[in-house]
Length: 172
Image (tube, rainbow, N blue to C red; front, side, top):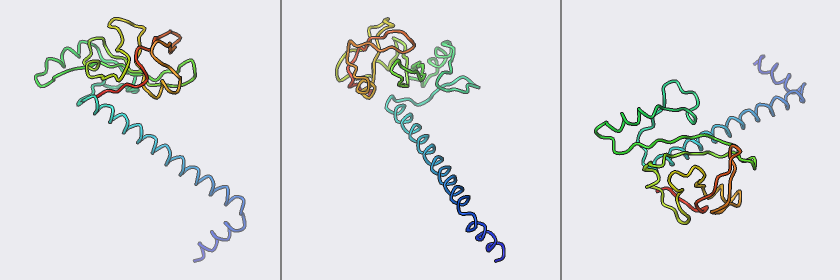
């Protein structure tokens, strides 16, 4: 009991220090809770996106620290296609870029021959022209936030890209 009395007396004698300590502990616990929830939300959204695309296996180069910008040699894709139970292989490049408006967006690049284009069902607009490096498909959230529609231009990396599909699009 003697130690508890000392602790309680110190807490009561120094109310400013005690209240600052309690606020710091509360901020630390709140920050941890927010970051944990944010991480789980990103993970769930990522998993839902992969499930909607029908993804069963993701391949990354060994030792890559940043999974978004890691690369694999295209020859590996041809080796994976040779495996007997593999139905399709789709290459995809991912990165987070900042637009001229200051918005950070996730950018996904697909090969012109990717089966992901075949699985994409558009509500309006059209897919990018094969071979065109200037056409881009954007999601509804980004289109609404930047007030973009088909034919408008968007400028990531300082280059001009033409929006080829309306804001409302889905991947089945």
